[in-house]
Image 1 (cartoon, rainbow, N blue to C red):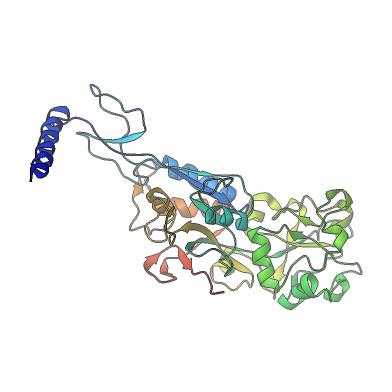
Image 2 (cartoon, rainbow, N blue to C red):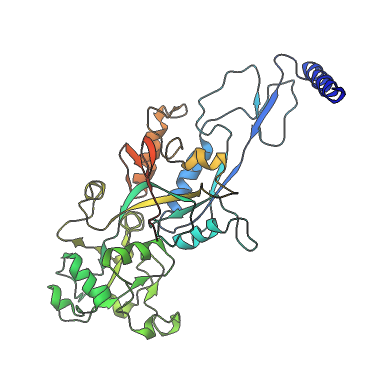
Length: 380
């Protein structure tokens, strides 16, 4: 009983002191800005950098105080007599994107969060969907759509692929995996050996394309050209770039290339091809009629015993209420531009060559609708 009286007295004293220290109209410190760190995919690296910058600049709480009050120096939000502006990034959290190291490697960083020697991140960028081999407890949130057409240098002088506008899914499997189509003349091109290039292992682009063609896309590359030794003519190259293709190989080369990245890079001399007669475009990607369409994901921790996604991370990328996903009705209007933040999100996606997801059921066992989709990790 004596201890209970002490606690009651202490609470009363704290309340009295607080009444004198924080009079009506004074500053009350509430929350402070938090870092949101993303890592992984190259495909979405520049896209997320653009999105980060816009999110960081979005309106939120006041952090500067009115004259006559002491300014906190810890980036806290403050409450005072002013009315609050539109709050899109409420606490002025700071999103940043680490330089790409590949989707699967970013996912590995997330799975091993907190271990020595592993960079601390809050979510992983991924241009591939979940695999049964991924650690349990991750949530894959699709926020945009892309496609993986094949590319060739059909416009260079003497290109064997000059007259090849479309390949079938089976032809692509026979070129990249089965090694039964080895000459451009077998698919309507000139008589020249097809020279296969493939993205590096660990990239989401490689994983997604392997899934589309039903096997490893470097299967038909001779061993001496996939040994990791760039001095002898490596044909396993960094994803979504044509610049490493050897000049002597360009007239006969083929490789996968992200549609979104192609829109921002210009292709570096490559041209994209149709599949089954369907050209990649925002419309065919959105409606799924382009055969090799894919989701682009942000991945966060949500089923672990510790180190699950922070509130700040969820406010940015969560599939339901996150800034990247919520609907126009749930978003505010940007007071600086007069444009709804959802519209600005979609503008950034389109400027980076990818296709926004239409509002619809979130899926993956998550109720509600948004502009994102959850894809469950498949059973082993």
